[in-house]
Image 1 (spheres, helix red, strand yellow):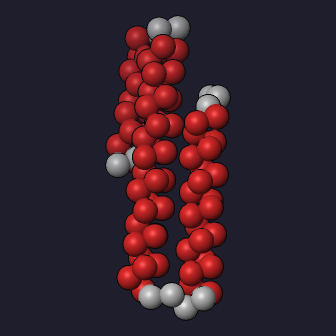
Image 2: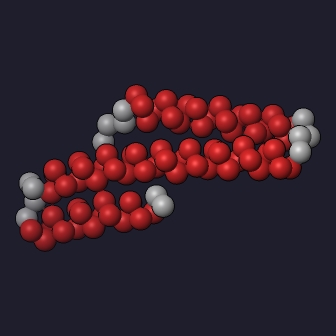
Length: 87
């Protein structure tokens, strides 16, 4: 699977958020502020996972047309499992 520049940029932003959280911890910032930033990072990861999975789902469905009926079912089930795990 290819990962779009948009997906990669999201990961880079999340990386920056995590560095910021670590810096906050090292500086002894308030727990509430650290948790707020951790929650924002988690939300960003969840949304990025959704983007990656939805792109993968489209690819799986398109590729499944090349397989036999039984194989198509397995490919689609795998894609749906990824979608469920991303939530």
